[in-house]
Length: 420
Image (tube, rainbow, N blue to C red; front, side, top):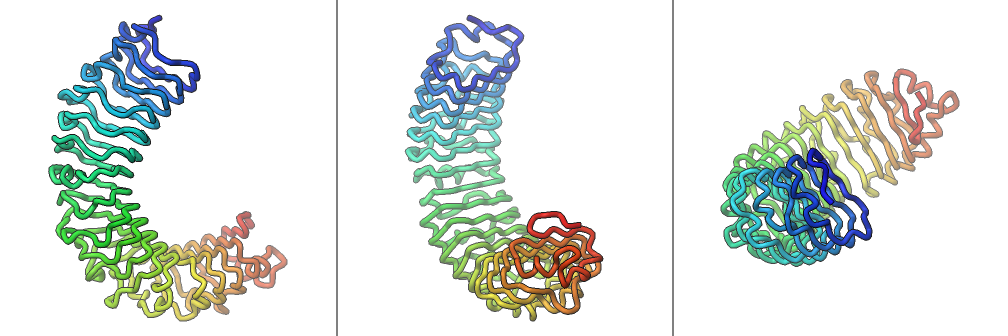
C-alpha cells in the first residue's frame, strides 16, 4: 500500500494495533513535507525503505514500543525539524544518522527514559539553531565531538551527564541557555549569552565568578536551587532577574544597586533572603516580592519612593505584615497587587496620592476591612477584590457602607464577578 504521490501532510494518532508501517508505503511519495506519529503504542519499527527525502518536519511522540528510528535518515536532506518524545523503548540512535546536514534547524529529544546516548556526528548539523534535551535520566554522556558550534539555543533538563561543561565550552555562538536538574553545573561558557535559565540544580551553591563578564546577558532566571547561598556580581546590562524557590539564598547580587539597566525584578519563595543595604536599582519598572519573610519586615525602610520608574508592584504571601500604613510608593506606579496576606489590616496611607494608579488588585486578605480615609486615586480604572470577606461586604453594590467611595471607578470586580 502506498500513499498518494501528492500527499503533503500525514498525521497518525492512537493507532493502538499498528506494529509497523507497510513496506514501500512512502517510497514513491515525493511531496510529503510533514509527518507526525503520536500515541501508537504498538509501533516498533519503520519500513526499510526509509522516509521520503522531501520530508521537512518529523514528529514521533508517545510511541512507547518504538525501538529504533527510521533507517537512512541521513538521506532526508530537506529535514528542518525533528521531535522525538516519550519513546521509552528507544535506547540509542542509528549510527551515521547525522552525516553532514545543512537543513535541520531544531532538534527536540524529550522524556525518553531509557535513552543512554546521543549519536556521534551531532556536530555535523551545521545549521542547527535549537537543541532541546529534556527528561532523559539515563543519558550520561554527550558525543565526543560535542554539539554544533553555531548552536544558538540549548535547553537541557534532567540529564545526568558530567560532560556538559566540556561540551558547552565550544559553543561560542550560544545565545540562550536553559539548564535544569544538572548537578554538575559549576560555570557558564559563552560570553555571547543573552539569556540563562537555571532550575532544579540541587548542588549549585554559588553562581560562577564569570557572571559579571557575560556582557551580553539580559535575562537571568534561577529556580529550585536549594543549595544556592549567594550571588556574584552581575553584568550591568542585565534587564530581567527572576529568582524563585531558593530556600537558602541569603544575599542579593553584589552591588545590585548599580544595575542601572535592571527593569524587572521578581523574587518568590526565598525565605532567607535579606534586603541589600545599598537598596534597589532606581530604574526598576516591575517589582514582585512573594513569600520572602526576611525581605518583608524592612519593607518600609526600602525607600520605595526613590524607584522613580516603578510602574508595577506586586507583594504577597506573608503572615507577618499587618500594616502598609508607612509604605510610600512612587507616583509612577500604575498597577499595585496585594495578595495572600492573612493578617493585613491596613493599606498605605498615601494610596490616594498615586495619581498614575490604574489597576488595584487585592486578593486573599481576610482581615483587611477598609481603605484609608482619603479613599482611592481618582484615576483608578480597575479594582479587583477577591477572598477578602470584610472588604466585599463593605463594597456591596448599592448596599455596602463604602460603596459610594467607588463611584468613580469604571470597572469593579468583587469575588471574580463583574460589578460594574
